[in-house]
Length: 280
Ligand SMILES: [Zn+2]
Image 1 (cartoon, helix red, strand yellow):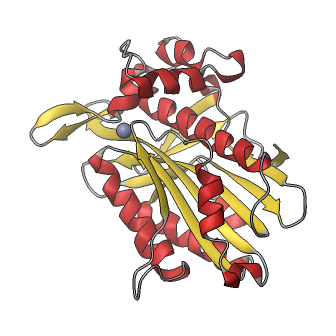
Image 2 (cartoon, protein in one colour):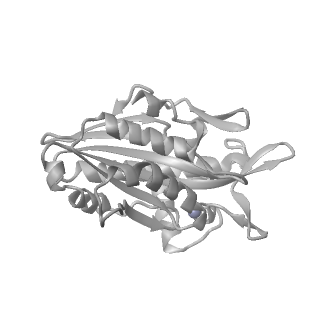
Image 3 (cartoon, helix red, strand yellow):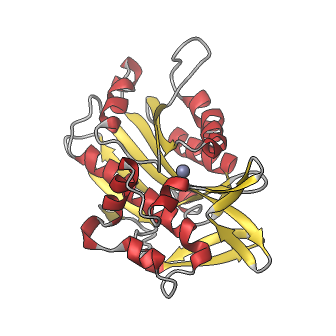
């Protein structure tokens, strides 16, 4: 738990995040491990998905075919959690081995934002794609462009969860510096989508005893190797008849975020952060 908590808010290489998650899974004493990843359709997300496959899926999951393991996936515009999907994933990984004890099910939810160096620091939200400037994440950028695509409408509803006008805050340059808008939008989105996963889990009974770890993350699509910010962690112990849920990490009110840089790597601090975990 401590090694994962140490990554929260800190820009970290993809392989380090994935191997930290593997070490976490190996330490919980589960009799089987499963994985479910939610990420955006954008092809830039292949690097993050590949890192999880190499470091976590290939080493811990049961063989789907001889020598081949696979995570359960939801891939769509803006990395929206599809209600009910975690129930299907949980049922798939309720293997005979899982039923001998309890299983560990990782749910990793990645939003993403490109980052570029500029003359006066770092700027988020666009990259050079195949020789031209391109929004990244384009789906999250659509939130501020009046897009009426069904995916964007659904994302917009989630950003208003609990009656908080997060998009208004993110669009207000007095509250959020415009060059950080895309990053903060991605953090908020990953946090909110992970919260939906947690709520879904709380409303069903798993097929076998399970410890769930839901990890909202933001992939940073950089000019060089990509990196990642872990936003937080929901731990849900569902090894008895009732789900016990705790959350530690960044909140989903973007006005609480502050950004610092250590050797060109971002660090997000948040006045809403509760490092010891709170019931959720
Ligand atoms: Zn995207």
